[in-house]
Length: 303
Length: 265
Image (cartoon, rainbow over the protein chains, first blue to last red):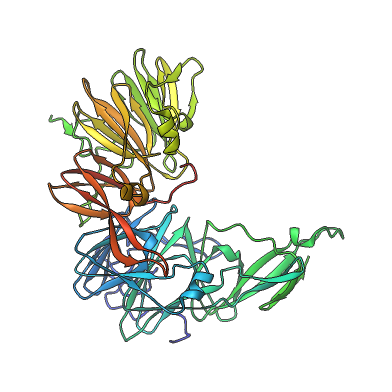
């Protein structure tokens, strides 16, 4: 797998989708690779975050010979029309409906004890064509489609995964950011983005499609080599595999008073380029980490 | 000029209408139907109004919409009391005559169903993002609705609840012990549901089947049968095969895309 950030391929049709960065069809209403609307201007904040536009209701995304249609806008569902010999992998709890003839089977991957320990679905499912299957999550938000060129990949936070074409290799790695905190007489490990990161790579020389469900809105930016940004750990959604992760703690100026210092400390996740990173607008409430005794490496600043 | 037929409720509307006068569905937007045959319930425009009997309902908001009902004298609505958002002080409320309070409590449903009468205004909403679905009931129509989806129904609708048949269906069907049943007898009526997330409907032909995540089921015509079926797919190391709700036509089936079992249930 290459560590270089995903860069656009040379334009084949004169149009490169600004969201999936692949040659696309400017004649349609939406990009056939990622479903992003063709006829919208990029909404870019002054600070450089690009808002991922919601996939239009009933937009279709092609992968292999199969098609995924995104239905709804509030809690969109992904309705797959699977061609014979093709399939998608997903977590069983996202299954909304299936046609009776669609073949469903368990799809086990790696150590289930690790997954169970991490609170992740132990057994994934694979639906194979021909047939229909539809998936949805349980939060208002957006479905984000990430076509993956052959040999490329993404790091994704736990529980954001909705589905992947079966040409995508799905593994996970230990989280690069962790804290060791004192609780009573014992110390515990805390993981600001969960104990594992999902890793999706389009292997075998074939491209693939990855669908994520993002509660709230999603914002994306490209970090240059060495450029860093601090984000709430709970808001991070995905990144190119070239992005590196770290922790940074800040204490606001308090006029010399130090009451339970963890009460006012902010633990950030530092994302450092090169590569693409994405955050969501709904995120979990930050943990209050008392009594830090160790970490994966954390810089510190007292204002 | 020809009158406009609403694609959702099939009622006739004057040609200048932008929203259906009977269900609030936008008339100037084409119905959205997926390739697999699911029709998306129309998202009601903010402040859209529609009429039932001599009363009106205005839908306000888009993320967690509110149904505000202006009741005429002699008209009324029935509802679960916890969905009441506000009301005019003068609007009387009472208990809807319904037996089986203990059974309802055991089934996790509100002990009583409440009714309010006109004249005056009363408003309802549920507690999560979603959309209001208006279902027009013509005489002799019967629909079954999952627990905790019912927002309000007009006074001409008769409300009851049906115990779900079969232990497997109760334990694994994902719809609780009871289904809310709505029937009209003499005159048409309207039922307002709150669907969590987006709502989709399809009409099954006689004998046609579809497998649903049980928590995704929202409503069905009473002619549609529902049966929990176990798939030979284990979802965990020590778990049994997963259950889905097999719906068999003929009739309409409505589903919601956010099928999490909410804390309010």
